[in-house]
Length: 207
Image (tube, rainbow, N blue to C red; front, side):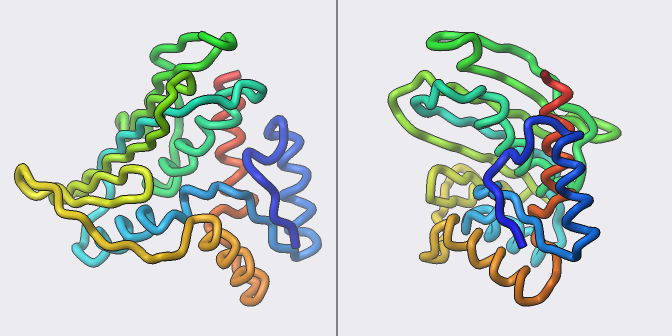
C-alpha cells in the first residue's frame, strides 16, 4: 500500500502505470491532496448533505509566499483542481484566464473550471504575497453559502458571518487517518489513484 505526495507523476501516462499496478496487485494507492481532508471542507459537505443541497459554485483564492523552485501549476493549482473534483465529481476542462510572473515565469494565475454544461469554479493563486491566506467560497443549490478562510469556517446568513466550530484534528491528521482506514477496510480513499489521475490529466492539459 502506498501514500504518495501530490501531484503524483510528471504526466498522466506515467501515473497511469502506477494506478494500474496498484489495481493489479490489489493495493491501496492514495495521493496527498490534503485540502480535501481539511475539517472545514468535510464540514461544508456534511452540512450541505444534511440540507439536501449540492455544491453549485466554488470560488478559490490563495495568497502566499513561494515556493519558487516548483512550478505553480503542479505545486499549487493541483490543490484547487482536487477541491473542484471533490465538489463536482468531475471537471471536463480547466482554462487559464490570466497569468503573471514575478520571481519566476508564472507566480500568479486565474483559472476557471467547467463541467459538461457550465463554469462551476474559479481559482486565483498569487504566490508573491507576504501574507498567507487561503479562502474558499462555497454556494449550495438552495442558497447556503460558506466561507472557509485558512482554518476557520463561516456560514453567511444575510449580512452576517456565523462561525462554525470545527474538529480539532488538522487536515494532515485527517489525511493520515483516511489512509490508515483505507488499509484496514481495503476500500479506496477519496483521493485514490483514479482521482489523482484525473487531476494529473487536467494539469497536463495546461502544459
